[in-house]
Image 1 (tube, rainbow, N blue to C red):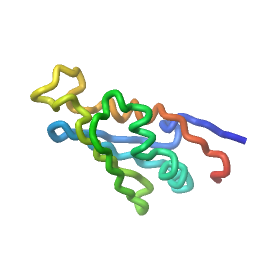
Image 2: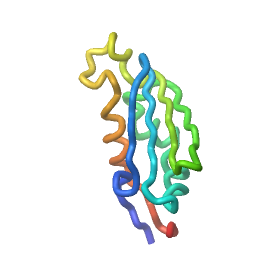
Image 3: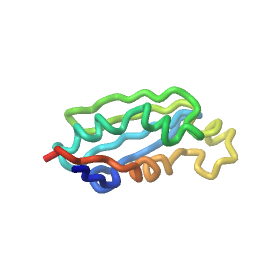
Length: 109
């Protein structure tokens, strides 16, 4: 049986920028949800869901002691603050967009 919830129900996130690179950290509230986060929120999934605006490589750094993941997304800000006409040149909306992804908690206690 599948138990699907928006990621925002089990985690919080913070995003920032450096040029055309966006940094996103996601941390689960409860340690038992870390494995679901680690398995289901991957660079490949982000590319699949947001490939229209994520045009470069995505690296994921695991933070197991903090129950989180840190994503570094290149070419994610249409040139960055000084070059982009995008209203979100700092990439602050990445947190909200990624926290809207659904996560399956089936089998997670």
